[in-house]
Length: 257
Image (tube, rainbow, N blue to C red; front, side):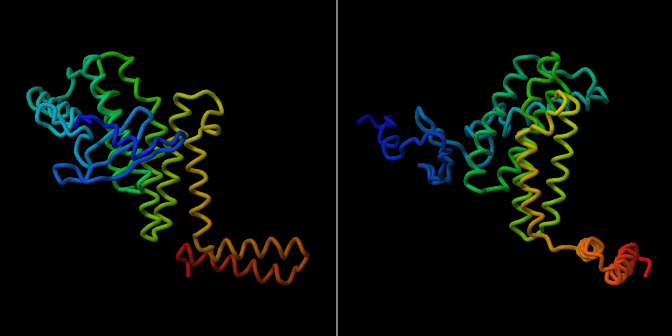
């Protein structure tokens, strides 16, 4: 069999429909690579830098190259006003962003959440860059439809990192921030009810619920629930004591005691 024929690899790693099949291998250059099995073969990506391993204009990515062009323009003119990206340049940035999407999707399956945060943040920056500098309005908004998904993946992975370190309250704060970003997006671009029906918001709400399950119940919340139960069961003396305790806990939280 020809040395360039991928048949041996494909037969050794069957494609599974409905699954995201990824793995890490050591390449011929002795560096770790990421491989993704797709129905027509195998995608191979570098772990760092641009996923295809190229260095456009001797930069890590096209986005880095165009950022430098903006800085050069600002240095010469004192402002970035007047700098713009033509349709071909915007298309190239979108195509490059798709490479990073493939890699952060693979890394999410591999549970390398730090790499997902890195690449999804980078794609949000690419989205913002085109939104700011694209000459044509169509190019300014071409990537906006992907914002909810990128935000969700970024926040979800950052929260998973925090949970892994035992920082559940930080994780909860990240998720709440992500939900606010999604709500703002759908209020701006979506029809009524889009945020409520968003699959990305559903994922983050489910994650929020799971994180809350592992948070210790605050004394105020616990006492309030006991008070509600005492009132419902007409245990008024218990309710009075619990009400006093609740007032005391709230004053402590405000630093009044």
